Image (cartoon, rainbow, N blue to C red; front, side):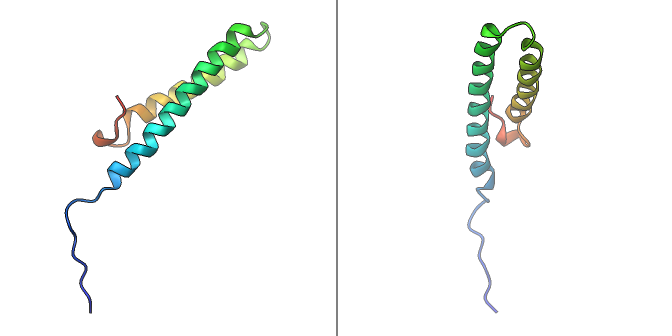
Length: 74
């Protein structure tokens, strides 16, 4: 039976950082686009756009906090 040797720590956290980083950047872009849309929108569309922006901001904050200390954006 062949044994597998582990060489150092797993790099899965590092791989996740790249994914979390990219997701955070995309959410920040979406928030910026929504801010522009809110400024240009008529009064009836503003509440829906703000609700979407708030939901995305909540997700962005969750991603920034990261699932582990190593995966935090900020």
